[in-house]
Image (cartoon, rainbow, N blue to C red; front, side, top):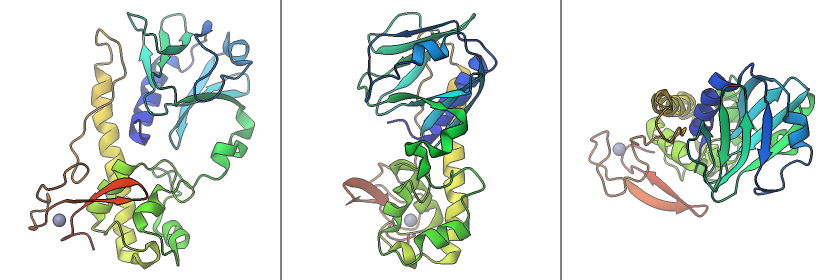
Length: 271
Ligand SMILES: [Zn+2]
């Protein structure tokens, strides 16, 4: 499932080919993904120039010169294919510029495409309640300290709450808590200030390492299949139950379930 680093990598990859380019053709191969494509998508995008691309949480944004922004979410299985040589039956949306073709391929169709007025992006319902970006200036020790104050819910579940931090997924929360030495089950309000001071840079470091890995995948984007592939990172705790902790502290990585999802942690160094 595409997480924030994959979306960031995708946005950067698309930006190299789309920024400043005019969209010459838009094709829809079905009428919906998770929800219907906007009725005016083809009309608004055809002939528009892409002025910039950006990301908010796990959404990619194509800002058009017509005061509109196309927002895409990759859902469970979405990806953009650049200059695909062979059509895929799951290419649902096709964009063309003078020199490239871009296909939004989403076999499970949990993704979405929306068109929002650029000036009203912050009020878009999916964005209105989002917390700060984890890679932006809004994620600070004082923000977390205020947001977690008095909360008895486990710190791991609070970090997955998009209202507290936008766009963090299961993998990166597990990894960041390991780096910061915080027990995922600890009540959020009881996480100490020194722990929060380790957590903020841990979140940034885990995401940036993943984005760098993705960047290296992107460099060979021009593989014959022309895909912006996902990357396999080597994780410190995620998926490593039963294996020794990478801190060599004698701990064995444990898997537990929190909020219906797996958590991996080391009972020795995460307190
Ligand atoms: Zn450990």
